[in-house]
Length: 277
Length: 347
Image (cartoon, rainbow over all chains, first blue to last red; front, side, top):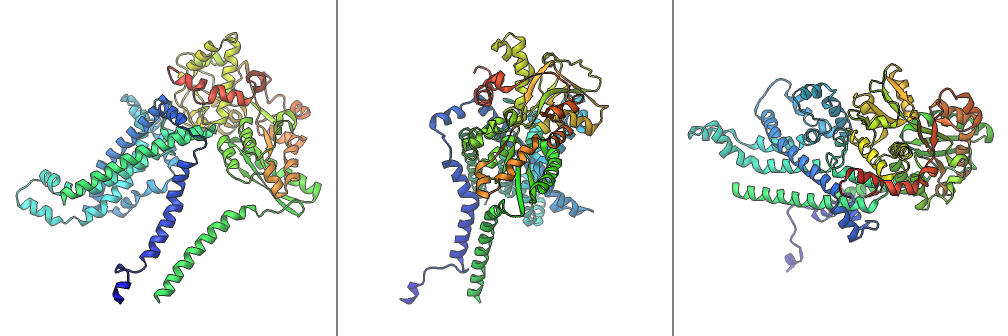
């Protein structure tokens, strides 16, 4: 009857409009630029694509990009968990300042971070000269790239973990303690399973950020082809020579691999959530 | 109530879009040459910032006196290739003053600059020139005198990557040209020379300023391959007591060219002023400003005045040594080109 004419609307009004705006802006800001990249590949033929994809220098740059971004995100996951834990669980003087400091890497232009890190970690810098005596070279090696990416990625981990940690009730831990489990066991079988999904999210965000990072890395990496050259730099270098097709090819491969890796981490996260729940 | 909220949201969205659209469109609202005020945009590369800051003032005064028209000149600086791409993508440049002809050729290919731009002004449309020199630490501890000292064991050479930096292509070609002269034109031996040279490079910066920072401020490397004007500027900024400039026995004549962006000036009606802007670079005053900013003047009278400042060494041009930029670019810096072969084994 009359009631049937009314479509099944949600309880909250305005879904149609908000979804419309959402899709509109998502298209404007994300979808259109990315599809333009895919379609506007000036003169990109399959032959050219294959040639770029199998170029040893390109392959080496992917290895550098993905390995350093992965390593940095892993370290960030551990350090970020520690940082978030301290910020949520303890009170100490200056905590607010400490908490705000975590966001700084977001605000700082990455190139500035790169320049600063390079001057600290170069053989002549104050950390670098000290490390050089121990036989560790940081600047202009993959280790330098990892440090730059750690700096860029750490806020992602901390900020995804913080709210979840805040929600965790201390009484669950207390109950575990009453039932006779030690600190270590409580951590691994009570706390960690609940933290695993946000931890994976934080890792994925830091990882994704690291793959595309350009500004901070070009200064500290030394940009040596086959050794410390990152994929984004290779894209820039091809653009500099007006090789739009080549640059697009490198970018498409980078996007594809990143998408697969991120899809993988998302699935992993779902699986963890299901099994932990 | 609910309806008015909806309206407000729609109005807000429409408004924000209108603002965005008009903001994009307002770039074209510049006045033509007939009016009293005019604005020019000079799209240039990084190290010319100081040069054009002084030149723009001089030109504005000259133009005001000559035509009564007030001209303000805006400057845009960045890597030469990147700047060229911005113009191709629609940056409203009236004139471009870039690091190498290849970058202007690219704008010509996009249809924005008429063919034959390079013969429009004297000296291949390069009003001032420079060359590539070697900057070493004070007292020259490694005893560097010429290009072949750069391939010795234990010498660290700093130069940017020629595939990402237009300026660095001159560095590379200067070394190549020396090597080919000293190996009786043997290309294989010259490649070996370049391979050894780049094996001595511990850091490949993406741009010339980055390489200068690495060498000057971070204290890395024994010798910096640099444009003469950058080397002189570093000396001035950081003190004569820290570095020495070594002039190699021969080098390349770096000719940073200039061109009017025909399509843009015709659209905007700024051709007259834009052409005068470039022409005036060749005048006594323009040349003096170039020389004061460490670029080699091309006008004989000014050349004579500054002959102590710029040491006379044998300089070769791109055209006579490499058959022009397009050819040099293709042979050396394209994918699979000679620079790639130096780095990628088995190609």
